[in-house]
Length: 178
Image (cartoon, rainbow, N blue to C red; front, side, top):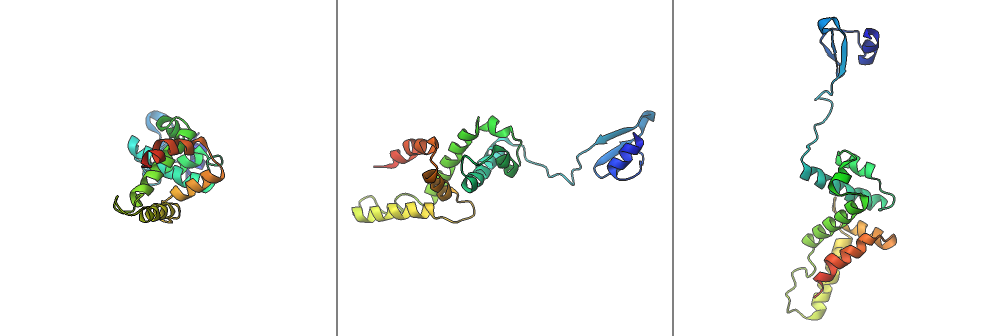
């Protein structure tokens, strides 16, 4: 055991010292070689449920935009979010539900940034309102800011549709039509 622990930690045993994240101890005449995660080498992840959920949505936006729904993996989303792979099941149930939440989240952010009417008054001529609506749509689709995944997600949906887009249309887009 002593030789194994010495090789494992990369140094000969020194009682009670820490070497490379391991603690070697010889208390009570017994050798204990216990792995300790060194705080300095492992970043502490915030385990707040709401923050984990938000991190999954944001990481999901990036992964789904890059790979599409069918090629995206829960493992990659969790890796980018710094979350346990079971977190998707805990917060959303499955990959499909996460995807629906990602679409809704980024559509909401895009609408906040570029409202449908772009500030045109309600009594404006139809041509002016239509111009504002089309401009708003194009600004949302072609937004290239660092976390604006809405355009890429919608583009992927048009190329390789899923049932999630149908739900977005029914729940979020149709109610906005006046």
